[in-house]
Length: 466
Ligand SMILES: [Zn+2]
Image (cartoon, rainbow, N blue to C red; front, top):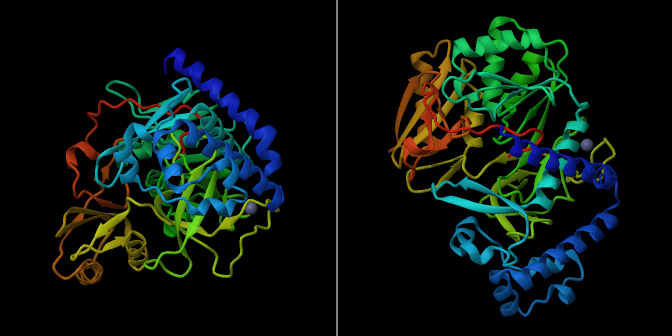
């Protein structure tokens, strides 16, 4: 990392730390009234700024005869504003950006299911909140500064660089998630046995590979206090596997590259706390969702640079069946049960019906011999199942195909391939359910065996959990 980037990162981290100590350590215990008062003030500032300096919102509020200074008396007044979808945001382009050019910001690019990138400008004030929320999350797990954190993500070595890299300041050790074949992963485990991490951090898919390998090797990490997972939906099966193999608990984080909202798990492990100071959560019922599922609609409260108001994330939250929103840890931040699926984790059945990934996770739970899997939809009528298994009988293969046909339509061509070569995206995620429809395969993904990447992306620390 070059020195200017390092200094920039240290500054942002410090701002985040200050915000955590000054605000988040207290606000996690606020009453509902105190939190609503805070959110209302932040929201009014955001919308007032948007009305004055963001062309799209200036036009919108005018057409609705909505003046945030006078018409926003309580939070529920906000729901008269329309939802914003990602395709709409993309077409609006610069009309969503603040005309004041002097707001310091970074640029985040995300690729959506259609493959077109979406560019979000994120103000430093929000970046500080992102860092602060992650600091708080880690603190909830018992993390202490300079605990050993083995990070299996966010480091992509270029030609000639080693697969393992140290960040001595924070005591992080990075392992390339790009190169996790059997031999390298065994080497990672041996290295970790010597280094003895307090935490393992990574995508659920990368930590799952590590867990399978450690189990095979009989490796134990006696100092391990927990896992930090993020950026992919953590399945129940992955959680069970990690906790069983390593005898430590998972602390999951949910966030988006657009940074509209975030949520994370505390030490009571009763669900995910919503970070109410970070963004405004709306959990909406939809006719196509199950009773306890909600569409996540989010509004970041600090990003004046490119506000996304009532942004429909496409991600699904699961609420507790009994309506429980409080946690035994005593923090007042509302609780949901879990995140069920992310918008990109969908396959399309014959006839165009979207089938969320959870349908497949529950199916594979019934096949013990399948250790890991990846379902790839290459075309509207072709889905490939890649899997790692000691053995899969002919009868099991047939019944798996039958079950997949039931979910995806009898006309779907289903191909089974036993291999550990899973497709990865540009930052090393191996999503278990992946649709390539409308994407150019070579530009979006690459095989785990292909190490000729030219991408250099190094994680900058306690951040970037999306
Ligand atoms: Zn809690």
